[in-house]
Length: 150
Image 1 (cartoon, rainbow, N blue to C red):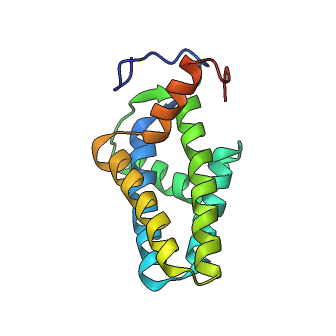
Image 2 (cartoon, rainbow, N blue to C red; image 1 turned 60 degrees about the vertical axis):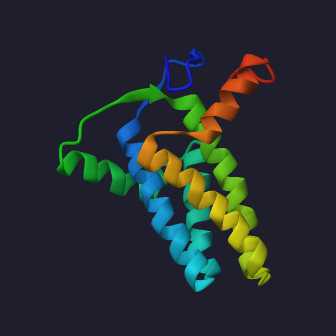
């Protein structure tokens, strides 16, 4: 059972929640930096990283690599969680960061601030409290059988 009380028997693959929470912390720092400096280059790097994690190339993700090395170095352990909802959340993040990049590139800074604010909010919930909003959406979609796996 996960934090919202629903089981997620979608696949048998597990990932380390500690690594995921450290990745979310890095997203906070990168997203806040891109937002503060209104720098779409940093946002593009974040966009690529989300893409790697969302579409099956997580071994290429620099943020995941750093998080895994941090977990290993500081012996932070392993806390298993289902992969599918986290991958779905990364896919949502990929599209949100894509909108963030585009709005920064087009210099729509107010809109970029709103989108960036949501990104920072959701990454903060994941990193500090272990609350994955994308995972909650995923569980509701699977509950109503809109799709079977991700």
